[in-house]
Image (cartoon, rainbow, N blue to C red; front, top):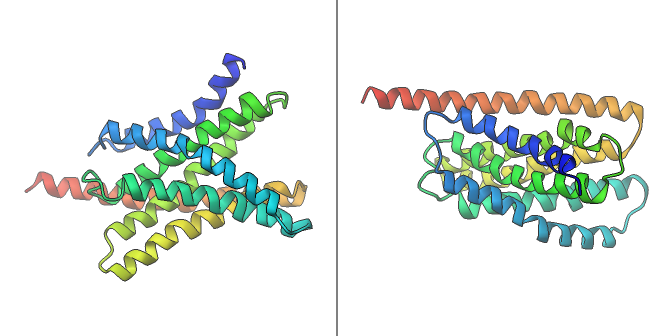
Length: 233
């Protein structure tokens, strides 16, 4: 293990977290809670790896169906379910969750905790001989986890402030289904290893950035309006 590879592996996730933390300047979340969520995001790597290995071994398909099962079920469903579970268990009912933007903050901290450790495992330990792998993962894989998390956090925020239990359950389901579909599509397109699908992949990544920046700005504006109204009370 080289120090340069380790730094390259952990920098993208920490940089994205710092940007988001600075954005949340009006009503900072408890640092202890955020560190806990980030740490738990790393902890869930263990059960995720075990389940993914088991599911990959049991994959009954061949060809494109094999790749789809691996992308949407082995990776997408497993990873996003555990991330959502951590947020629901340790952030969703926390007293500090007092505005919708917090849902995105919590989901991103969990997700980037996972993505940072996953990146270290890939870049430093598993594929250290692949040149510039750290750069590819810094540009796509780690930000991808953040984008899936913004979607998850958006729907968990909607669930938290839903007007009825039925709508809350629906939003909680959406907080798993949409990140799983985004994650699965991301992995599936990469696994095809074809220039045509690479172009589709790049278009999909742009779509993810656009839709999640819109969601991020929407909840961020609501947070700013809430604090402006409080200042006049």
